[in-house]
Length: 596
Image 1 (cartoon, rainbow, N blue to C red):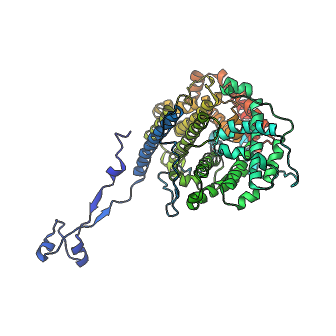
Image 2 (image 1 turned 90 degrees about the vertical axis):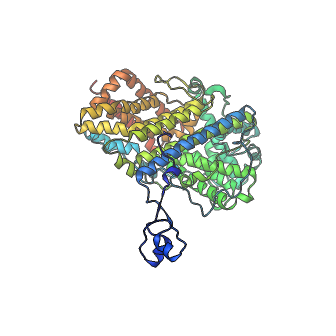
């Protein structure tokens, strides 16, 4: 692609103004020579002003963005390789402990051409697909569907524990809770240093920010341990059993720990420091476990705002360790907020996406007792950041209002092919421990980290090829030219293949169940909607019958629905929007197989 596309520098040609400066000022005719005849006659110093070219077209902007995408993947290649070298005890520029104060300039807004921003005005995949005329034959499905935002906003408020009630946590219980927290939350989202974790136990009974943070760590550790136990066999089949599983102490009430922390979270809202920022972030993470996306988004917004304030104004007063925590919380908020706003259209964004090109990526940080575990956590974190950035750019280039209008007639296959190429490059540069295989039969990944990243890859692939799928379906409905459809069907098959693999590779990874149950349920509802639409489209139904197989589709849907139902019931609360998705999947299964 780079050999075809001209670089930005090559396209920045300039033109010479028609009149020289002297003739322009005197308003006399200029012949355009250098020097011009008028200046020669008057013995004047002739000179011309250079002016920028006309504003670039939309095509130029897209092409430049693609060039930037390729450059970003190249940068990712270097960073991932650097971390892999660090794991082998070789010095790496990525894990440098350099402390760069003042990383954000107040006068330097984010560059919209570089930042991975999801369009502020978009429609979630579920609601968009349900609006298709193919569902005119299933009016009850539409009638029963209630907006995700409406369902979530009607939920009862979070209960609060009495202010004088503090859950009792014994030292041996704390040790187990910390183990569960470190190997899960602080591995996926490694923002709390080893030293900070060790100092929290003495603060648990104090009504302070440190006490709030300690209770949040205990609550999250308890939640992860419970999910580990419940899905231990599932995780072992997926390679996630390489970490020891501890029994949960019956004397610890994880929900009570969260309620205690939540009762004083207003202190974190009022303060501007690193501990307050982390408290707000962990509160948002626990709300994900409770399947409450609106509350999660609120606290992620609050944490992100504190990140930006700290990075803009207070960086010079932070220690290197605090500075690294701030950067990491920023990237955590970027990942999780992006996941949420994809499914909740029009919800206000924190501004992380518009600043992400200016914030450095994670570097060396001691989050675990083992240096290798800390480095592996950083590597996994980098991989999650990079795929989320690519997903955001995919949404920006393919699903903004301008992009949808542009590809309404015929999809831009050059753009789609380039984005898929970037996705494949992301997978290629992953180091061996994180590099996953692709099996259409749902074979287990070597470990849970590979399994989680594979699900991200498959989601991205389906989103990239969905415009082609949409085009084939729409052309079928309008009795379009068969020759045009036949040319596009092989590309639409990529979308069908990706959603099938996404469904069959769904597993009870602790990361998925604790963090992504709400996100995963909406994603899987979209998967089944795509399969139902393909089933109702003649040119694509053949693909399902001949290349996938009816029995396989039936079994995969049934197993996926059962898994989601289990994920939903793992949390102390059940999200009404998750329940709606599970019920919708059951309804669509019935509609698909009613006539078979």
